[in-house]
Amino acid sequence: MSSTNTNTEEKKDDKILINKEEFDRIRNARGAEVCPYCLSTNFVKRGTRQNVGQVVQLYLCKNIGLPDGKGCGRTFSAQDIKGKHFPLHIIIEAMSYYNIGLNLIDTCNVIKQKFGVAPEPATLSDWINEYKSLCRYERLRPYAIKMFGPKETIEVTTMAHRQLYRFRYHKAKTILMLEEYKNRVHFPLKEYLDNVSSETPHQYFQDGERM
Image 1 (tube, rainbow, N blue to C red):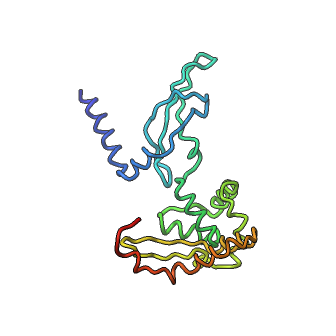
Image 2: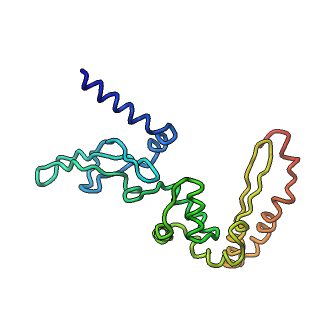
Image 3: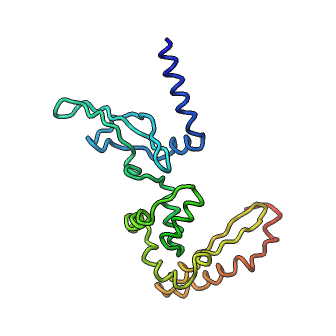
C-alpha cells in the first residue's frame, strides 16, 4: 500500500511540473499516426519528455505481430516533432521574422527575447531550406528586402471598431504580385489597402449593430 501511494504521489508531482497552458498544447497537438519503427497503429501514450523548448508527448508501441515473433515495444514521438528541439510555433515565428528582412543572427536574437530560447543561426538556415517548398515567399524575399526594411515590410494598424482589430498589410508582397502578374484589375486593390490606415472612416464602425 505504501509503495502504491508513493507512485501515485510521484505521478501527481510530475503533472504539477507542466502548467495548464503546456498541458493543453500537448493534448491538442497533432498526435502520432503510426509507429515509425514497425508502422503499426497499435500504440498508447507513455508520458512526456522535456526538450529545450517544449514538452513532447511520447508513445509506446504495443505491436506483438512482428515476423520474428517478438513485439516492437519501442518508444517514439510524433513524426512532425521527432528530431526537433524547438516547438513548431517557434520555428514558424523564426521563419516569419527572417522573411520580413531580418538576417539570421538578428532573427535568432528576436526569438530569444520573445520566447527565452532560440536556435543557432545555422539551425534557422536549415529550417528555411527544409520548409521552403511550403513557404514559397522565400523566392520573393530577395526582391522584397530591397524595397522595404524589416519594420516597413508589413503595415500594422490597430483599429478601434467597438473592439480592437489589428489590420496587417504586406506591402512588399502586394507590389511584387502586381509586377509578376501585371493585371490592372488588382491595382485598385493596392490603392485601397494603401489607404486603409489613413482614410478609413472609423467613426462609422464605432456605433450600431455589426453585420
